[in-house]
Image (cartoon, rainbow, N blue to C red; front, side, top):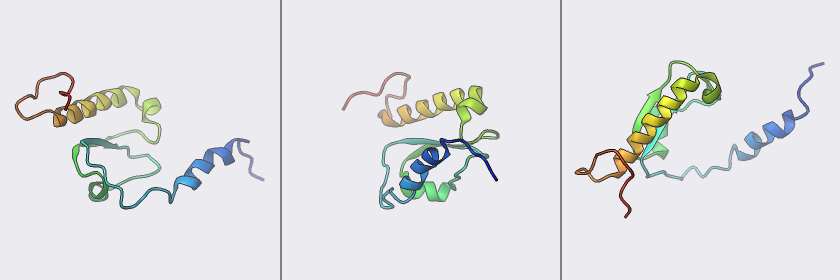
Length: 106
């Protein structure tokens, strides 16, 4: 008989309830930075990601890591997060204003 954690059912519940809840017509138009980790539970090919995320400014495929990259490859995760945020912020600035700093308010 297999034994598991007494919290297993509640942990799995979020996946069960949210599996079909996302609107397939949902589109994300803001600049987005995405990283795919090779050992993650869910993997999304870039063509599929483009159907939802219409403005991918940075796409990265990590060499290592999985579903919890901040625990598995923390140094890489932090560097990738910083670079991704930099790409998103740069994409929000007008072309003549690509210097570091916060995006101008609209």
